[in-house]
Image 1 (cartoon, rainbow, N blue to C red):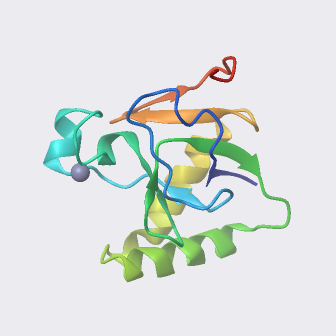
Image 2 (image 1 turned 90 degrees about the horizontal axis):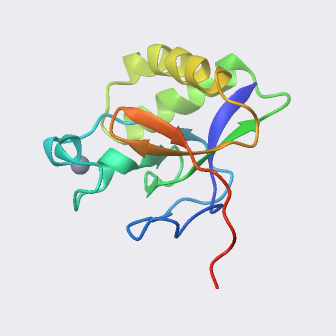
Length: 130
Ligand SMILES: [Zn+2]
């Protein structure tokens, strides 16, 4: 199935990019704080980032990836334990999993996405810097 994973691809295209996740780590789209909601370029950064399920850290770039053999129960369980570990209500895991799968379904595998609060945009490949 198609999921969002952390990627370093296109990192640096925005001056305020960051990637504290491990490449390939499963991601989720966490709700923003007030600061993040006011601007995706806020200092907090949550309005432009995806959250890593293992690292509990953020990245501004997400890759749409096909993970063969990975199933819905695997995914819901990964979300459940990660939400619980981060202090989010773990009962929300199924709803979050369903939402994220529906979201990823709409994009082609290999697409790199960025977040602008509630808006998600494909990063088009550009020439590497330098
Ligand atoms: Zn925030």
